Length: 120
Image 1 (cartoon, rainbow, N blue to C red):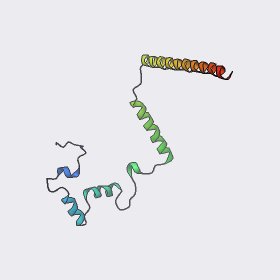
Image 2: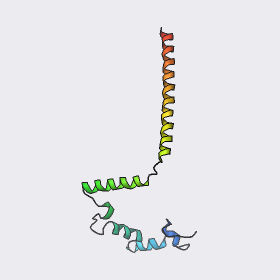
Image 3: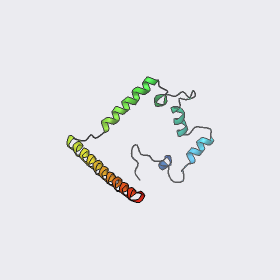
Image 4: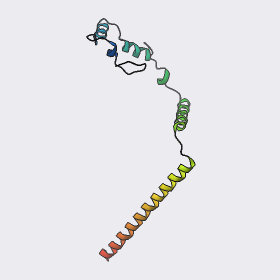
């Protein structure tokens, strides 16, 4: 298996056979932090544990502004139909609704006639 940049390979994939987890166990046993634990500590902001970056608590207006920016970004990703496609889709939907309305109206009429015949 070849490794590429940005792959999701496990940390053990770079180790030779027989040394699967030995390096991590010795560093943990010696009292040193593993690479994963150091990264978590750095992301948490060190000793203080103060949140920063994406996870920081933002004000109400900042959160609303981010929300609307995300809405606009998502709307830019939408593939909008052309005018001809829109007319065609609308025609199909309206036709389908009319057919179902006629079907339900016909069934309603049949059931009402059946009810009058049964109950008088």
